[in-house]
Image 1 (cartoon, rainbow, N blue to C red):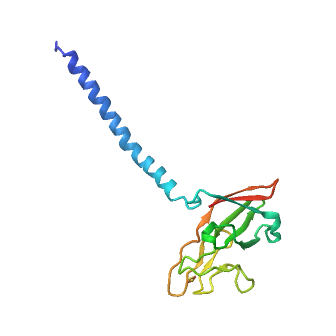
Image 2: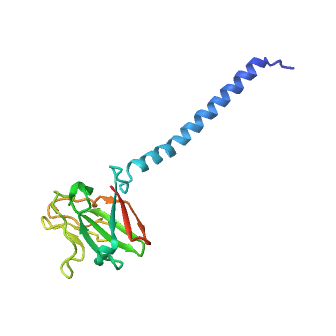
Image 3: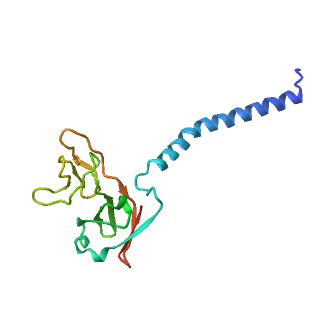
Amino acid sequence: MQHVDPSETHSRRRFLHQAASSIGLVLAAPVITSIIAACETDETTGPTGKQYTVQISDHPELAVIGGITSIVVGDLNNKNPVFVSRVAVEAFAVFSTTCTHQGCQVALPEPPTFVNCHCPCHGAEYSPEDGSVRQQPFGGTATDLPRFSSTYNSSTTILTING
Ligand code: FES
């Protein structure tokens, strides 16, 4: 019969416990990293932490789904206008009017010529629903217009925008 030293058993148990803990950390690391990355790249979260309000009932063009306007909302978007687009009965998309190509101000859709928000400088076009690029500018590249998250209170018709 083989004699096993109790202190050796204790050490072996401790080693196995530490190894299992390390493996757990290694397996959890990608999950933790992706959670941190998701938080850092959430473009709908305002970088300033400020909140701004818009009285939607003051803008009749936003009374119907698909309605869109551009308005200055305090110092949001570096005091440049933002597009406010009604995407559902109780949901709005808010995104910058500053073209991501070279910084010109993007204009509202002007059907029938422009069904998209369009930049007069080099022809970039953006979705009026979310500011995503629909047509790249002549000789250049644009990315989606930055968005601002918002919440809508249908009782007060106030849209709160996170700047
Ligand atoms: S600045 Fe808008 S397309 Fe060039």
